Length: 251
Image (cartoon, rainbow, N blue to C red; front, side):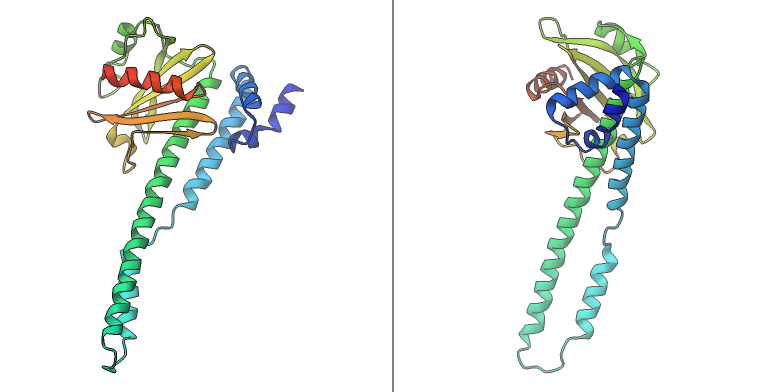
């Protein structure tokens, strides 16, 4: 019966429309119910696939060439007000430049949203997994060496003594078929995923040093020394900022 009640709320959860108390309760249910967790992940992936499909059409350089050719063909032969066609052409060119900038910005924003959406899906899958980590240890000197030979880069982990954060362990995750590290931290009752990938794994997506939300999760991202960091969890924005600061200091 509990599964049936929560199943009716999975679509609203995927769209980020549940109330905070319902979100927390559903996440607790997903941690203990493999069936609902798999259903939730499937809906999140379907939503992300639809978002990607909606961004596939982007005007190319040939579009500008066709507009310019059309303007040249329709240019009047009369010399009266000879400045008008040049002004019109300049105005259209300016509009095309502005349009191209907007298209580029929208495309970059869509790529960033798709990237964050994919990483959020990985975080949800980790929450729902019965074995969320492959190396279980609170000791950073145990977790970091475990990744040697499994990923093509190395990283540093912060000293957490005296902080509310606890290192749970880590696992290898993949982004665009590139291996990276997923580190699991716990703060009070909240679980946080820290993803570290090489810049080439994110492709043309620009990793900005910024904070945002995705599906009610807080997200922090930045780049350092050829690596991209993503911190995702349902902990407070203040907690994510503190953990992010520790990670940046250790890097």
